[in-house]
Image (spheres, rainbow, N blue to C red):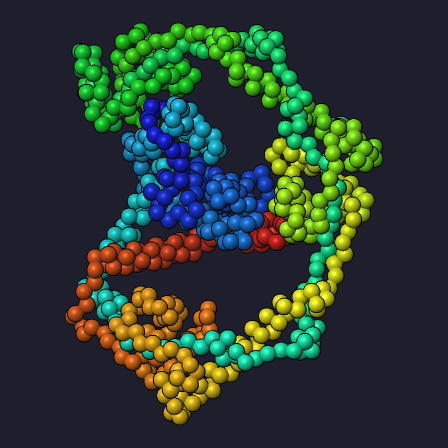
Length: 633
């Protein structure tokens, strides 16, 4: 395995790499096509074709699962939010870049790859973890090996050789273009405006019970109470099991003797290391260190510090020489994909066996955990057997000295009365939609199989009773019905009033100020407003865009806002004359970034057409969309 003996504090190696070298990351994807990964998979179905390569459902799910895990989302939820489509798009972009770079003959040398590996691992070691262990963990988590890692870096570097010129192509933006954009953003307008609200226009609108009753009859299906269910439940959790588990000192001593080999620590060596990009520099450092100078002083930025390691912690090319040398030996330079290693054996700690006192506490915890697991498994088997024999929840609870409680009512969406908030079981059940769906398939009096409701809690649910769905009576929802009716009527009155106002203004029968006075609205004037301004009462991006798009200063702009309807008109518009636009450096930077992204998007669109990319949208929908959710219930 590769080894760097680096210090660090994070294990996000793949996410960091993808973002740093491609710059197109949507969800922080890991290395994508690696040595022909996109060639099918155990799970049937090809999600996309890029030229002759395929992105299988298995490969996509491996990448997507890693990407959405940090968001605490399921793949189905990620699909609904559009994340899976973005992930697939990025995988396709990566694959088209890989194929295009290969077609262009872009080959990245071994030294360049080694340098990149060196930089990647440098800051990935977590506290208390050896660099090799960190790398092993990262590779294991991502399902990669070292060959795939180095191959991926080679491909990513080749892709970067394509990416950089595309971005550089728009580094220069003509002065006339930046000046025109600056003039566009420097435009200023004076605007007068006021807002009319449904409450203001329709404040006199009232309703009697007969009107509300009639309105309720037209929408009463929207007030239907869904079917609810009440369950009897018995729970088993780790806390109950722990009370029945007891580990004696004799048990600990016996386990220590049986597992003696487990507590044997092999020979450990403290190894000081430096890694050089070329052999000549490594040889010079080794000779100077043998001559009495410190390895750190002769290595400069190539020095990697020291680490305590066992023989199995190191790759073979390093472990055999390092563990075959005497204390104080400076090894001849050894080459790995990371570069040329110079290693000094700083100290040797002989193999030893930890005594019982050193491991007693941890060993007791391990034995307790094993015993609790075995006890829980035994109880689960007993419960399953009792259920198969037709025993009731109460009978099973009595045999296990447990209690049965009633929870609910709860509906199929997990809604329940506020009085049930104190019960942790119903709260957990409300969050477990899959289990809830299963329980709503039960017949009255039927008992469901033992279910795991959380990490350490199992439960048996029996359907106690079904509360049928029903339509609410008018008296139950009168206040809400009145609120809805008033909102609709007042909005309709506002819309009608606006239409009449605009007609009068178009016919020049009145003025903008006179309308505001008639309606009792406050007419405001905002001067020197820009496209990015934040003006009280006018702080609506849709309204501002409409006002800055308006070319006829006699027109009144109407925009629906959160509070009501905004009426506004432009009093004056001022755009700097040609030659007077002065864009800021930050604005120019932003425009270049936008133009760069536009160029990249066009390039990737052309690549996908060139490689005749096809996406199996039906498979994506069937696997992660609504059909997938239905199938899981």
